[in-house]
Amino acid sequence: MSIHAPEKHWWKPMDKEELIWLSIAFIWCQFITFIMPYAHVYGDHNPPGETIKTTPEEFGDLVDKFIEANTVGEKNGMPVVEVGADVKDVYMIGRNYQWEPVLKLQKGKEYRLHLSSADWQHGFSLMPMNLNMMALPGYDYVLKITPNTTGEHVVICNEFCGAGHHVMSGMIIVN
Ligand SMILES: [Cu+2]
Image (cartoon, rainbow, N blue to C red; front, side, top):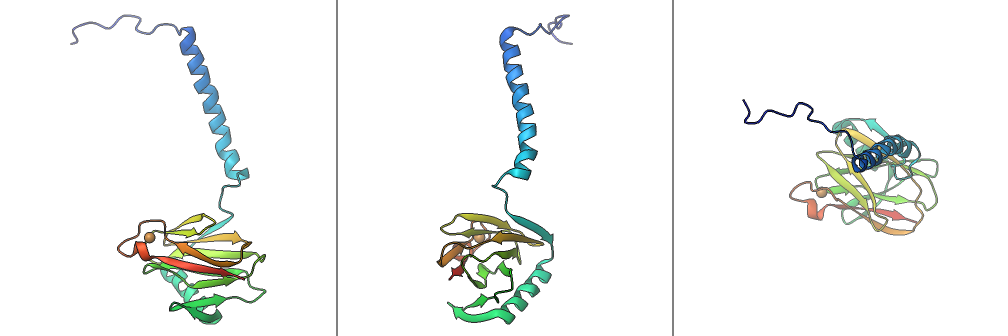
């Protein structure tokens, strides 16, 4: 039993200020409700591509075969891979604290870059473009990209992934 009984009519009619704030909040809610699905469909901040369900083993095999079939050289002990003019699909996997393989791409050509992880969460961060993607095992993230800058572009991992995170890197060379 409380010390004081609650007032019989505990609520008071809205005053002007409360009505104004409530109206602002209501309109804002309507705006947010509309803008979320709108931005999802029309926003240009969404990653341009698709996501395919896979397994770390399956994707790892794909990358190994891709490397085996298309290696054209080596850089710092890492295979350098280049695909033919008619091939669009290129693969990169984050594993054992490195992004594999080194990709050699042509400027102005459209590619489907498949990204995934063999073990746990990694970040794919392409410098200096600041293109960022998260790579999780079990998902093949396909990014539609068209390189527009020639040179050696470093990929770093921007998701803390373990003891070797600070040395985890990769490379995309654009000619
Ligand atoms: Cu990392």
